[in-house]
Length: 251
Image (cartoon, rainbow, N blue to C red):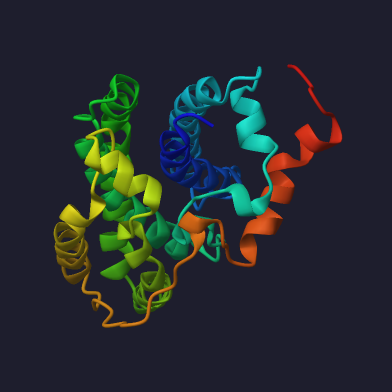
């Protein structure tokens, strides 16, 4: 395929938003309060809306009459290039907020750089998404502080969640071949440039929330190359069910 690296670069960004949007969508009707429930659902819709824009662009690159739905619903697990962090399950509310915050800080930094892309379509999608993701980060960050500096139980659960999810953070800054190529031609972002700033910002908020910054030296990778955790297959079974059961269904 012409522009193979561009296509894979788009998937690397869009798939993370899709999978995290799906995870948050699973919580609809299960939030700890009505306001929080609605907020999580809206964040899910924001992420899926961004995903649609990316996939529409990717579909044009593929040609052959492919649509955004084909890309979202008709790939196998190894063809999804999302980071491992976003596919982790909704263990409890504090875990959801920890996962969200660790991704949100990265996501906002990514879009802030991507809006300067030489690719006008990617730049436009990023510029449009920044306002939404800024809210996402503020929402999740507030909950990190509220739960971390709350009761002993909420503090312990939040600390456990951060400790568990920390292993997936370094993958955010690994560069695939497609990432490197898009960075060289100024279409994409060299995410390694803001790795240090990411950990500084995350660590600062964790300390404000009276939480300890993990000192883990082992990290887990694979999602950006299509190698996922055991949770991904179950997530895709739900995500793809309607399209697989009723092929080419139109609303």
